[in-house]
Image (cartoon, rainbow, N blue to C red; front, top):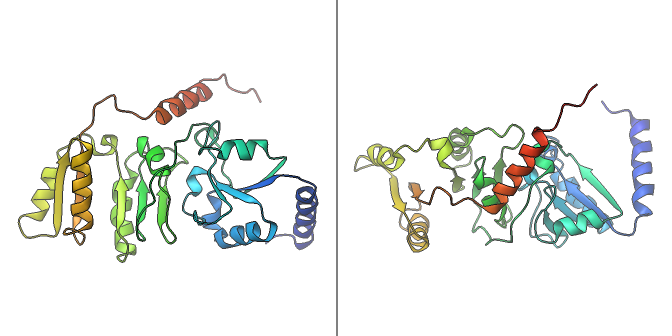
Length: 259
């Protein structure tokens, strides 16, 4: 239980500090989820009129169509213009953050296309982190993003569990070959289908084939489990992942801090 007098004093001190600021900013963190404080965070933004951003692991916790939303703040470089706004603010309030080497360094990418309808997106560790951050999530879109430990492989089981929990949503999982270990998974899905199941799979090697596959998955095969395998060059890695990885490597390679 919170100490009521201490809490009231903290709120008064924070309000006094923010009221003196000329250009304050709010930044939401992943603990908004566990505290169920997403709506309260937006109410605060509405009441004070501040711009707000989210940390990468808080994506999906607040509406991105809100006029005060400025993007994802992710360390050294973030969503276009987001870092400039946050870092030039004379005051900022982080609500429910988790700070570690993964969340406090990195680079971001230009705006992407909005996701359609009300799907749920699961972003696997690695390049999918950065590619899925490009999505503009519509209202009601779920988003799962595991950053705390950088675990690889969690998203496969998470996709199955999420799909069972929200059968009314189309769950979209973006997973790299690190999780799938370069197995022939299209053959596995074909075996599961066995000519009579509700599964569909295909391999694509270019943008045109990918567009066609997505049209099929969202059209005639929309009620099926769809598995689309993208074949890309081994060196086809986003510049965002390369720069983020180099920053994390540098941070983790620093000498230990004597206590």
